[in-house]
Figure (spheres, rainbow, N blue to C red):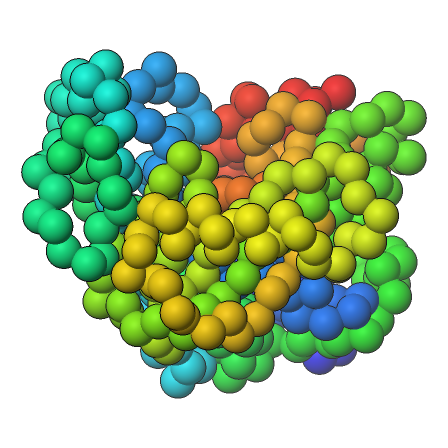
Length: 350
């Protein structure tokens, strides 16, 4: 490719999704990844595309809703172009209700979801059935929402690369994270290292990394909903595995090291879902997730750098936000249409 219309720096879920959205709109795209595809938090195992609770509505929750509703068509287009699975399926989520107060609040949230989710998904209180694939619940009731979906992070990233190449996009891996020699716009979607670069360039802390650990076990529940139990995500994947994650660590010595905190995740999952007892651990993962100071994705122009843009700060919700982030960033950079919510702008973290 002699002259791209857009250069995207970073081969994580934000960078790949933006590159794919631009490509399918007809742009010539070059994506540059310094290490390997999914080298940061996008190379994990969990892949929970789960919504925030339907209350105290704000721009972040509205943006996430749009993205979750867009995700099925978005990732179907990736599979159609690449011929590879992404592991996407919208199968919902189960959460236990462990007190009478939680039961009442869940019912109230269900009523709010009817309007906030625009009738396109439900948040329901349902009785526990006693099935093996259910979390234990002290009240005998569960929340079942039909908005949550799952994605296999590694499958999705590699399918996006194949889709880009199939449509004529250029994907360069092993290139340095320096300013590319190009006259086209550049979007920096470089995760944790990108946040550190922003901190240095802007002279203040706009974001930081949070370490996460997760693991993958051999248990086939591929057609079942994911579960969330006291902050723990238990996500069945299409390949007959179940992901369990994740920790949130602000201090660490080895960013890629797994330790006793990872094993604690497994113990918690076994206590919540006894059916997982005896499942073989296939993989353990650790990595640094980028969290913006605002706690929302950081999108828009890089302050003081003409023609350069930022897409970062996905933290725990990056996969669920990816489809909408891609749409908004391509609208902004290639079409000049600014639909970035105020709380998502880089300036919101200054």
